[in-house]
Image 1 (cartoon, rainbow, N blue to C red):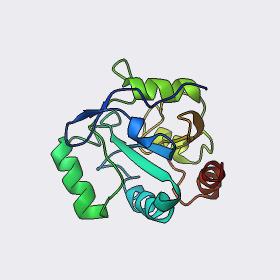
Image 2: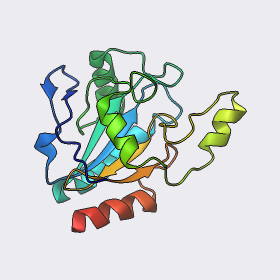
Image 3: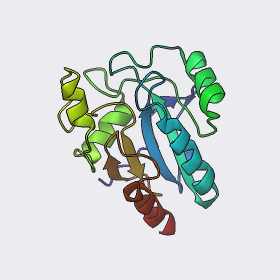
Image 4: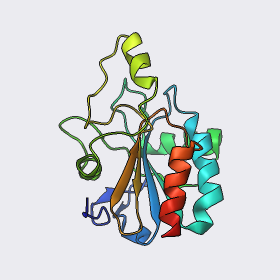
Length: 181
């Protein structure tokens, strides 16, 4: 832990080069997203959480990724339109990146290195196996909608399995604890 994510180069969904520096002092929930996944309805809960906690200092950052069964095939413009139209997403979205494999984005390299094991492995692992898939073993990201919690100092403090919803008490309690610091 102890390494900040603020200086890692990323692109906004509009294609502008940036970093996460503008989020210093905020609590971040970083999520790899996808538009054509069984977990895509989690956008709704993430937006609700963002609306409830934004004024207290929470930022949810969505990073679309096409790593899992090509469930995010669209362009950045298509992704942004989908999220706006279907889920009225107001939290920041970033340009599509890779969150697994040899071309993994440096942000996800840092997140995974900081917290190599997910909390709350639910039935999703078994569901993937039952569908005939071979899920990624830790420390790799298991699937879309895995969540990383970053404290106000830019340190990764928690990691949640993809099937843990945004309103799950484990996520909400961890966010509230970080917001209170």
